[in-house]
Image (spheres, rainbow, N blue to C red):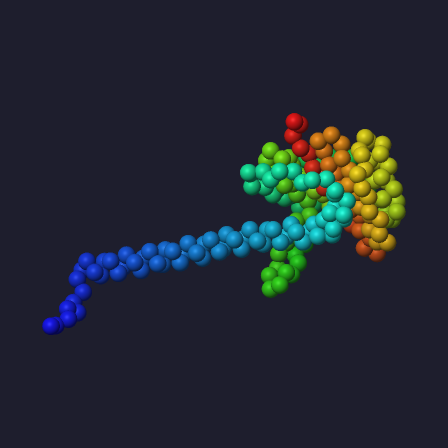
Length: 201
């Protein structure tokens, strides 16, 4: 019995359809990988810029975290050389200081840009506003100024951290939280202020 080796036009079209679907699926995989890479890169940038601050905040923050929101957080960067408008300027205690500018850092084989001044909108949970600046004031002078500012303006200092080259504060007032980190860099001090404003319940 002879084997039929002929390929009909219908068979060819079926093969083309399978190949097309396969290529489309491969394209979707590449596209999804690209999206995931972009999200991962953004996440790395934010985490890198907050690494030192989070060490202090985690030591200070003993309160339970809020319930997760169903909305995806939205990150908005401030224009270069500016603080975000939602960060009250009263939190910047060195009037001569300028906002830190973003910089390019190497993470593995990739170069990424840090994010220094930004907001993160958590939807119903509230908005975080973060500002970073450099100061020529001493570590002790800045720490004393921030502690006095919090006490004088109705903030409850929940915790504070003191290390040889850094100071940290975590405070609360009503629906607002604030974390402050001051890092001694030798000839200058890096100051990071994160302010979280929740909607009134």
